[in-house]
Image (cartoon, rainbow, N blue to C red; front, side, top):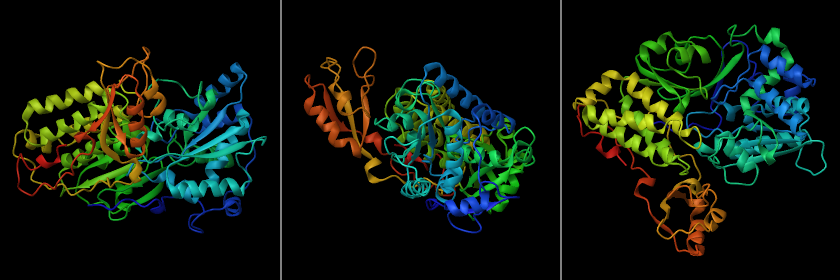
Length: 526
């Protein structure tokens, strides 16, 4: 079983380094070394900055890939229309066990990220900068970098800059969750669709983008569009950062120009020559079978065209010795446990999908396979955030990419391979963020809609338009146990209770012994 990735794994580069320039000289570029390596940076007017981002086809590097120029213009227009100062937010929340590219940048080149964020703030006339992080190392590095620039959260300062520390959870990296936490609320999606470019931190138009995106903006501003476009593909110029893990000899973060063959990237990390498949884009990404991965190249458009995803930049190959569907089941259980517990498609649908995949692997036959497909279809586009959508896409790609293994399990014989735990899934969250094994339940026969529970535990209970809780049950993390008990005691109608939740912590998936058949994965069911 793979060990957890360190915060800062080995870093390598193909071609000339842009984002990772200076990494061969020092472990961390402080402000003085940053200026020696990259040189000074002149501010740009708003439309000039948007035109630059458009000229280099800069898209968000956090997964969604939204055009940065369009986002910048939308924030500027909203701020002018409303007559308010916008806010700039750097999303450095990298909470997936297989992703480390943004963490590497925040730890080793924090000033490159701040360069891009401050360029945007100056162009927009913003007076507030928030950097969202989830790790001790990234928080320390960003705080130090802000101090080196003389930036802080002092009242009356030209620019108020602060670090927003959130728990390490998959959903805290969602943009609305980061905005909500920056406003003093729980680091969870609010359950309503609001564009941050219209209403974000403090209700102001907010430019929120991923840490690598701001670093890319800073590189482009220094080199100019023409020089930046000399690297990589014509329609996707520049470089990308990838995190390589899974069945590799050397887990690493790699900077590569777009257009590099994926097979070359895998060779650099020491992937086995015989692959079953490659997971592209991380645990909200998509699997490619071995033949497709061999011909794929590293770019957003090229990977999407062959059924993959650049996503959050994670690339995880699987060797021939492990059960790919069993590995996917481990991830499915983890994704289900990462639910915020706020909506049915996530809180109920993802555990059901994990159980459905387990049924397939246990030899449940075509009926179990069709049930799994129905569940994944049902959770799409219905959640409070994108977590159900990304999880469903991952599961759908797993059953599509490994057709031979799927047929062996559906027919009841099994693929005969063990589950070796190749994909990194060790619990990297603080104990306080782990599930408590309990849930907060609402008794509808007693609830009178007083709403006190939503005031005491807003991270667990939200009120619907009718003033009643919008969900009947919510998993209780350890950090919320005391408040959940307080909500129970203070409910005037005695309509709340905390009870045991056996599904909150799925049992560990045991290895599939070689040569075993349909019951080999039975212990993996929650």
